[in-house]
Image (cartoon, rainbow, N blue to C red; front, side, top):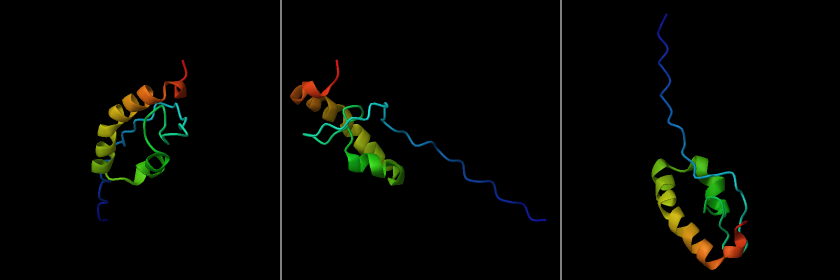
Length: 75
């Protein structure tokens, strides 16, 4: 009987989601993670490189959002 190949080991997909899913209507960014709805919806299908590139922009996005739209964030 031929041996079955072992499945490739999968790496979990890292997500910036913090379970605060509220999109600011003016910026179109989630106030929890800083992603757009398009990015959130396409996250699982993106390459690891694309996800990493987006994740690198999130701290700056959230900082700018907090500076320009402090009322968008709950106390």
